[in-house]
Length: 471
Image 1 (cartoon, rainbow, N blue to C red):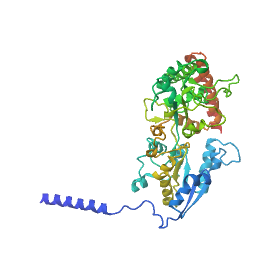
Image 2: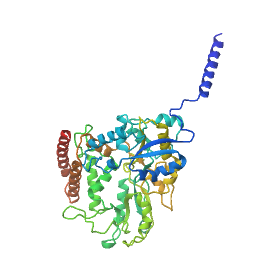
Image 3: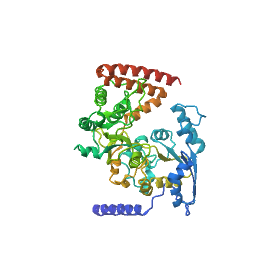
Image 4: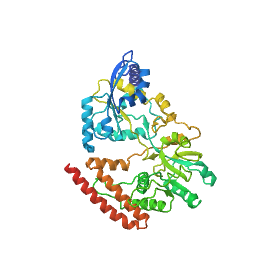
């Protein structure tokens, strides 16, 4: 008898499972009308830009959908719509929230920094449930991007990004082959890059000398900043009160950069007596065929071969290619130089969530990625499946690295905003960091410079925080 009862329960459970599979899950969002009509208010920089990048394509699929673009131009241009008066970050945040409340856009156009603020304010629709219900695939997105968006959303996905930007290392193939030096590879460390610089440092002299790496028009501090971000060095203690740059890691960084610049493993523009860069010196030696490598934005990929025909320049063409920016060996798949400007989210209070979701799906669709992958004018599609090598250029290098998780520079910017510190602090910080680095390049011991620099920056920080809190 007990055995029969057991089998009866098994049968009942199987029936329940089968019936539950037959019952269609209730859609989270209402379906579109049969003719695809609807109305959407879209928050974006301006109408012309939106229509050119997305709207015109979307209208082909949904010709009956009316889209009204609510311009954010005043916020992006920096005055927060305040008649030209420069606002503090907290004032801009308040203006942004007021703008959303007043204009009530269905789609909110934002960025990585503001995404977390909007999530905390409860302004955004949680996308995970609708993505799961509709099986909307994110598998071919840039590695680490969705994790970064979730980081900004306290673990939830509240926005998607159709494109990203990054810097890459360009290299002169002809110079490497001419001097029998192994070509650069993706995911090199800064140590490996400087070792290449050592090899080219031994080639030529005077007007015929070669550099391993050109820093472009970056000064010594900017080179330091690039390497610092790679190493993800922290500026502050956990509470954001104390500057912490007098550490072994920071000393090693200052020493490495100073040595590289002093020995001219890295080319930087010369400095005039007034402290400004001397732009009258010959332009970036990489483009003149005098440096083996340089760092530049992806926009230059489409511009490189055009430069040889520019009438105001007399440049000799050379074979070139790209690899990723240098990485921290402890985090070989992440880069601080990978980020996104554009994040699209749905207003939690929108009465048109279905229409908004259809537009967001379209903007982030494989079809749009195919279109944008053919036009690398700076922004790169986050669906990286469609990035293919082009005319021998290693375009796939762009998809090798994802955004840095727990980025120390992001944390620095966050603390500065929280303390309502003015931009003057960052200007003074950079000035003093550059002066300290230049002193080390000139021969001053790093062990003497860093303790004094930390004290000086701490005094600046204390003063800036005090002033910010009063405001």
